[in-house]
Length: 278
Length: 270
Image (tube, rainbow over all chains, first blue to last red; front, top):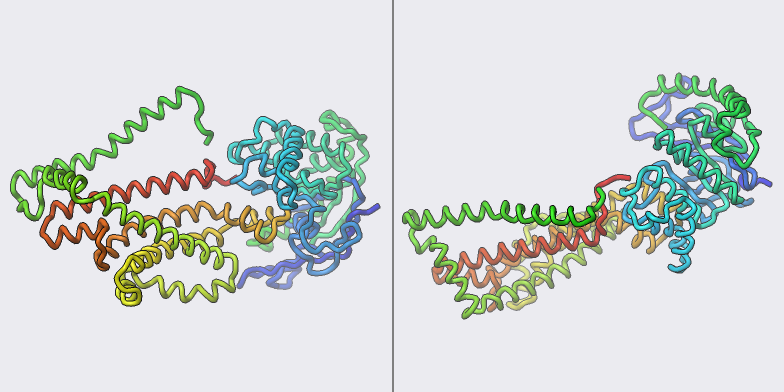
């Protein structure tokens, strides 16, 4: 069963006054981030989007979350067009993912608070989630008192607190060092494998994609559309050891082959159109 | 930075604090010595610049016999009342203009024109309208508090990071909850700055208001009395009192500001 259906999505951005971009030789003041983007996401799957910079992966997440609206096409969530942010989706950002004036506990609570869940209930759920991420001793800390890895753990706990059907993750581990990143990937997959949440995860790292995903969706250079959907045939539950298996390497190679030409296209594009890093 | 914990840090803090007090007393001490020297050498006639000793004794007699404390209390009451009215008004208008471009279009231009007029410039008009009483004093003081509070609240609300608004949206914060739980906390550092400036302005303008508007009690009134009776010692007593109490108010409001900022390091990005 498909929980999300994106049909023929287009998304254009207007540049600031006076700014221009060259699209295939045509000068324009608009950038097309997505065009002809079609994707069906199965209920409960872990789908990872990979693609060159500027291919509109994050733009797609914003559209699914309802933070912004497509220029053309419709995204269905549970059969209904997405129009505004709802409690059905949780979102984990790469940066500014927590409110700096709230403690870890209070950050995890905030989705529930907006829904009007009573205080006791909120605190109970938030504590449970923090303990799941091994952060019970840090519930009274403010974000600036936590390491980057801890901040992202709190941020994921925050997004999970409302029990969303779909969890959107926009390069949540990109700013972390390599070791912390692997640890968080392991934790995420351990926690996710115990739920029936659908995850859409954006990353630049092929390793990360292969380790986490049921399917990897390779997005083309701008304007982004799905180039290829690759089934990752690694068994679950997955643990860190799987990274060094030959199966892992084989899957990794499949994704890389699909991605390679798009990355070089995007490189060309960036050289032509400096001044826009979308 | 992590807050320091444990006894060793605490004793370090105390000795640093004492060092800090000594450092802050250096300049007053030098000025006092300089003053005494100038007076002793007779450079300035005593009627214009009385000796420190004379000023101190005037201060004591004013406390014991001449109701100095009552004058201070009258001024403080005016300032606090005017400040509360002005700051609340400024907060409301700043928030409204910060949240709504339409509100800013309606109120903005008038606000910015009015704010060009120094608050003291309104005194003649306000006195004429309300006659001689406590009311014009409080109005003038609240005007002084109103402008910095409006401007800083407006700036704070406008500069809330787009990322926090997105975070609020995906968490489902809307309407009043969005304002109370996200926008105001995000703008708080700026609002606290506005509050501090407002209180400072209120206290300063109180002096001017008391010079221009007759009242029986008030520290400005007292300075005015010193001037008209050519009692420079009394004038100086008034000046020192105003300076010290104003400083006390600033320290208090800054401590309150830190408390509402909840100990967090507001300038640190995450």
